[in-house]
Length: 142
Image 1 (cartoon, rainbow, N blue to C red):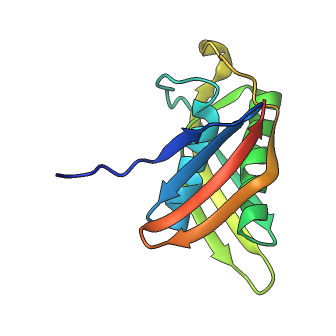
Image 2: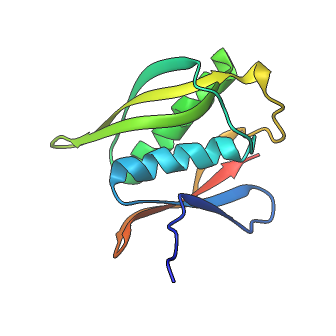
């Protein structure tokens, strides 16, 4: 029996949206967390008509993930950018992590957004390496 690895899964949460994302690398983990964030708002296929480059920094992995997802929500709120996928590169310097990403997506006005994600939270946030790769847990304020 072959078990297919999943990119992310949504978990029970009383008021907000919680998910766990997975990846065989840190970059894939962050890409899947971004995908899960936007999948919480719209479950269909998003076209790749727009390409943007972004960069964020963080003091640790949780801070880097928070800053990355917040930057994507900022693009959604200010430019109607709706993410389809992300290609990510993460580097560590002496005192911080740096993330550069090429993000692909479309104008959000082309999609019926079902849920408004207001923000990413630090509540119950986890980024850790596991025996199978990487896992993160994120709670989105809706």
